[in-house]
Length: 263
Image (cartoon, rainbow, N blue to C red):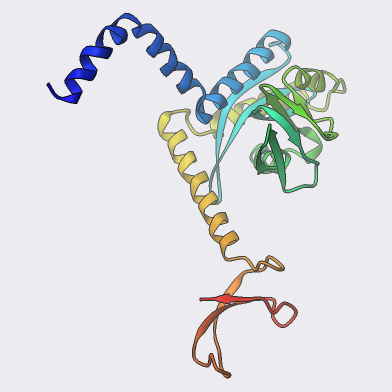
């Protein structure tokens, strides 16, 4: 009897009797993946909007993917009303969150583990700009909102438009001055419905591929950045000295910055 047969005979009854436990563990593991966390976070925001916003006044659009010059941009939620167009970015995260409006990256801290992520206000700025262009609206008609879902806690002061789950409804309802006519609201809704890419697996996959390409490009730029000033490094050839003829990476900011590294 080989080892596989011994293990099967020993564990077979346990696997058979407690199959539901293994299934539950598999489901929990799947729900804990980043993609599913995003889906669950968006579902929670959608549910809150449907329960706490008057659907006769506010129109909710979910997962709006719009074409851009360099690919696509995907917006988690867009809420249209006479009080403005609310562009919502959802973050399903836990732990302590540190950041400010101007910082390029924010920090997530879970016990001793520290992780950085893109400033969601900057991320949502592109969404807002794309919508502004697509809808033909002035900047004062759109409002950027970042909603944190999950067991997270802000450890630095946040702008009014960065809120926890329930807070985004209060932010929206604070806007009481009508800035769009009923006709304009209908036009915005029609443009959104006609201009968005059809929600489908193909649309989602193509958008994810586009995002990955952007991330890879930024990583390549970061790897080729000068360690002193951050400018791009360029490949040069030594013209004199003992290294004459050898190539090296030099800062493009030369002569102000003289940082070099081997090729």
